[in-house]
Image (cartoon, rainbow, N blue to C red; front, side, top):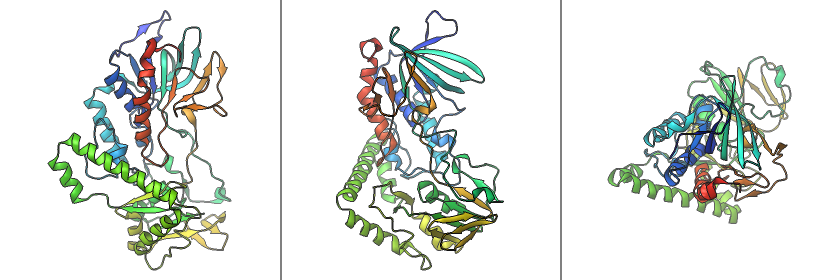
Length: 425
């Protein structure tokens, strides 16, 4: 794989066959596949932040972890080396850094290069990419651009409408920007939300907080899963790592696939299954309905995961950990008042209300000087957009590990990237 570049006649402008944006799962996987399967292609990887990891570098709220198993979320070319299918964020980032170092992928990466714009020229059949590097503009040329930028806004979280939030005298925190200096020990914490972030936060906060209250408008399905079994550990020890990784990858892939199919075609049975699994895990003071009875079938929205049942254990072990289900009337100076009159006192309110969607990392994309509006355009094979030549999005799956989608994109389309001398598609 070539890391070198060639001058194209403009001082300071570097030219590559492929320019990748982002050093998360998608960008690193694309770099590895190009290096392995098209070794004569020159590439560079631009990263706006100062470290690799993407989501796992950005999100640092208490307990941050995967909600997909790492045997399918990990790279297929470097199997997840630990026996826990669900892992904390720092361990996932460490794994990614080890993969980068082992396969010498760091030679392509340029940190603090925030890509601002990309313009395709039909005349030259190349992209011109403009990036900000520590306040200075840098320009690159590339025959093909891969956007491994994820699907949400790294700069601005989703601003949900919470009545009266401006009245609150305590601290308001969004998990995407969790303040590292904030100590929640002994505090009364109210977490608004019912998704994966909330299910992760509750047990982590409950370890030291005085009270933790989960405030949800409607519940989610929560699946408790054993996170480390002696059988998995034994299996990984007795077999060669690559073969054990392949077997575990297949096991978890098909297991997830069959669960999703069952929920799709047998929704009533699936509802009863979740009810039977959940009720024995709850303390007597918390009922299954309405707190764990969603108005939709399993996997119509993503199912939340609780490794080793830590979410339910937090409810059982900590009397100060509670759930309130209903609509918020208003936020007061000292907490939250619900429509039914229930009040929740809080020193801090955590707005775990979701992510702001942003396709392509907010990069201003133009074709022959004309701005591209993603809305209303067709996407081909889930990765290329109508009327936008030689540019690929990497998008994972909704009901499976992100990496599976990223890998399928990379494996099925890398030959298209490198064919015909990377001319216009």
